[in-house]
Amino acid sequence: MGVRSSFWLFVIKRLGISVFLLWGVATIMFLAARLVPGDVISVMLGEEAAADPVARQAMIERFGLDRPVPEQYYLHMTNLVQGDFGISMRTRGPVADELARAVPASLELGILAGLISAILGIFLGTLSALQRGKLADQLIRVVTVTGISVPLFWLALVALYVFSFKLQMFPGIGRLSPGVAPPPTATGMYTIDALLAGQLGTFADAFMHLLIPGAVLAVFTMTLITRFTRSAVLEVLNEDYVRTARAKGLTSVRILFAHVLRAAFVPIVTVIGIMFGAVLAGAVLVEEIFNFPGIGQMMFRSAVFLDMPGMIGIGLVVAVIYVGISFVTDILYGVIDPRIRVS
Image (tube, rainbow, N blue to C red):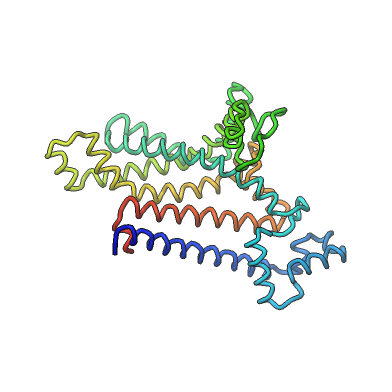
């Protein structure tokens, strides 16, 4: 089998696993909603709305709750494929519409936080490994311990108070400043949409609103990536082929990029993928503190209001993101280390 054929077979296998995982999550969500104690209609609509015979009958017909369970399951999966997550008990609007606004906002924030944490984490971790035992290594290790120890919500409050209210270096809460209109919607991410529309002022304003919450979210993940990168690079530096490369007279820069980082990248990619999921988890409180309308804020408010359709919709979207990250990580494994493709 050729190299190209083995790679695409590897991609198809991983894609099949991802689809199976998403089907499993959707099935678990269906069973969880049916196993909730009490009346399902009351859980989905709320006690007051469920007392309305018209609203109750509309919900029964929409989700086929008067039909056999297998038929309900079929309707459940069909609705999910069509993007129908039901009606939010909190907003009384379609959950899909709220997710369509929240998901791009969180992805925009998460991508920025992920880039900050990955770039700084790999750089600091590599520097710490190369300077092992020296002052730079000690300082970086102190920073990483501090970053892991500080509660994220406390750091968010301090950053908001210091940089937005005291120093006024950055805007405060929300995605845009008052009076700044959102750009025409293309992706739902204000920075990208503003660039596509040529609205540089809107882009700058949206980007400034992302910096503080993005940096706060990046702190915890950056420290873990730094520590993991340091360990991975130190392990590779002790390998025989690295000592052989030095004996051959190769420059330190070439050894670092051609041998050390390439070998260390497989475990580093793993932790970066996991940490992107941690960014989404940490976004719950950070988005609420910065009044950033993403899935973190939506998750928090849905939980407070016991909005079952909203929580189910968020759970499925988060599952899609996690599975997507895992799929991309697996593909990167195959690109970095072709030996993994045969597994």
